[in-house]
Image (cartoon, rainbow, N blue to C red; front, side, top):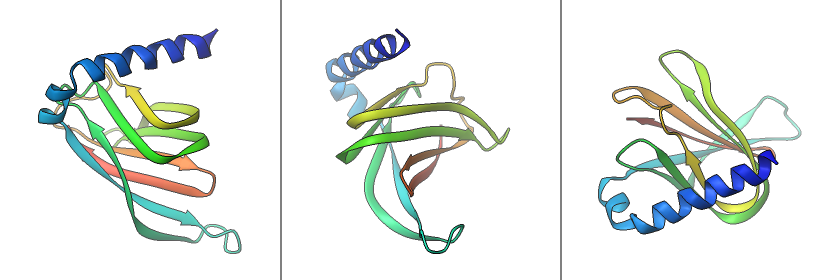
Length: 130
């Protein structure tokens, strides 16, 4: 039941995003995601490389749109507040290459956050300020 509710919420957010696409594009902030790969032979050691994956934060700080380019089976998405060092959003998404996060009331203007996406051994992360 929770999954159906979440899917409906995502659908509503996507429809809202589609209707307001022009407004979203004008006021969006791009969050550039860096890629951090865990090497299976050296646990704990990671190599950081540039990624062509981007996330977009709308001007009202309510929605983040993430295009992963390829459909993934499971992606764990977290948002961490730098001021409190706590996770303010964490969700497991599956079976989609486009993720829409509804962050209504979670982000505050002028504060810095980190978006982190974990797919298997790969971690994508990007920092942003509202």
